[in-house]
Image 1 (cartoon, rainbow, N blue to C red):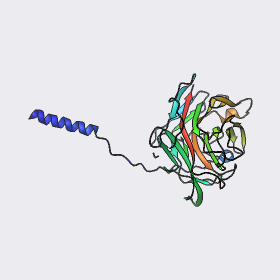
Image 2 (image 1 turned 120 degrees about the vertical axis):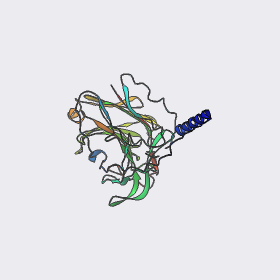
Image 3 (image 1 turned 45 degrees about the horizontal axis):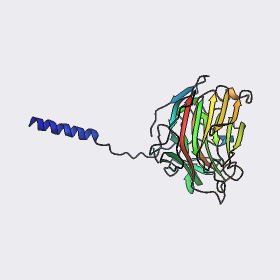
Image 4 (image 1 turned 180 degrees about the vertical axis):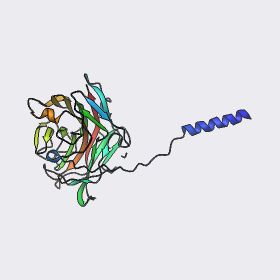
Length: 317
């Protein structure tokens, strides 16, 4: 009898230990409305800077959230890069956006574009190993305004920031040749202190004049004092499949690559304000903007417009 009782208790304990927890239903978390504009007018929030000539990474614990399309064979997970060590990455292999890594802004309408950034699983979600950042043509109440488009904007403010490093995104742009006027996806960095400096790993504006090119840029401020380069792909265009866009940021120098090929370089000799603008922690930004100074959508612009991101990776020396 004692053995039977003990056996029953043990079985019950095992059942209790192996029973899965009831699934949670996290509600969308509203990102702090922070007016972040393209190029000439992007302000930014908050966190104390740390100046140093040594690489630094600051990762802060935070919460997590919801719910993409994939084409093409994926490369191995974070292959080794000689001379660099991987310090941060998101491969987007989950079923929801990791809110410990990313903020998803909500209810943000800016004067520089036509859309409203929303933290909706219709506009930013993961599926099949990719992140989709989607712009939709739909009317939405955005603060005190009504907007004609919804869009999505992710950042790592308060969660992860870096001083120097190798920053990479592998992505497919929505900027197709015949239907992308007014679309503007980007992967870029801004300083935690909201001050001077911006590094655009890649901007991918759409439209007939721009869709074949990828833009690399740096900004001192938004007067604007900037330097940029528009690199036209020798074959194809950024929407024909996944392409890898990389920026290496070191003390005194920035280098840009597309699919492993060097395309642009800036340093203290080309850029007098380099040291002042690029010597403190920067956070990561991923977004799709609709409309702006490069033009607004026309009747041919295709929606939904999906910026499909396979991975974001950060290495340091």
